[in-house]
Image (cartoon, rainbow over all chains, first blue to last red; front, side):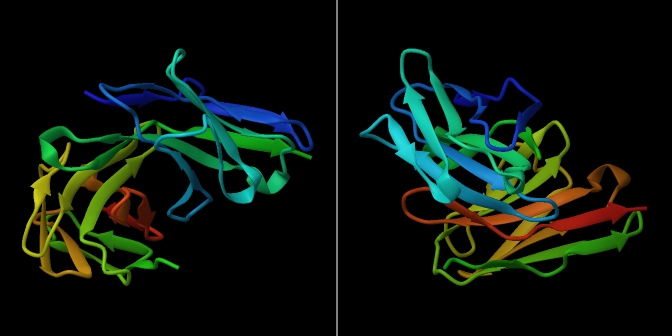
Length: 115
Length: 111
């Protein structure tokens, strides 16, 4: 079965520093990978996805993610963190079990950016 | 922009009540999903639908049912609410490239 893991419950970073939120995956076949962000009391917002092509994917709000097949990772990155980036981040992988396309989500990582 | 709306942001119900959560999307998406979100557990899929009047069980369907009478509307039904169904409920629809778009969520409290 497809799965993703987010090994860190929380990541703390100072404003202006680079940030990384980690995600590893386990899939059979080629992975479709996604990152979503959830601000307090809101639904999830799509940030970016990897289907094929360049290993570095650029998304919304200055975020990017690096697909690494050998390490089965899809880490989310941003060169310079903002306090407003503080939120809950979810990694997800597409699952095709049963012939239907679904997303399997990680448990989430809370990002706290300190001034 | 894709818009997914949910009928209530906050809802308080009593044990044993029948609860309806409504979700509407305006992008003509065929695929719609209901999740519940609990701290430390991420999002868990309750039910999904790939067409009108079609439904499939997700990972945690027990205690829930769904209805999809029209393409744009997907309803989640708690037949007899219980305290362990207190949670945040998220609805989503997806495009043909599997990107899901979420509503704002309904925070349900069952007393």
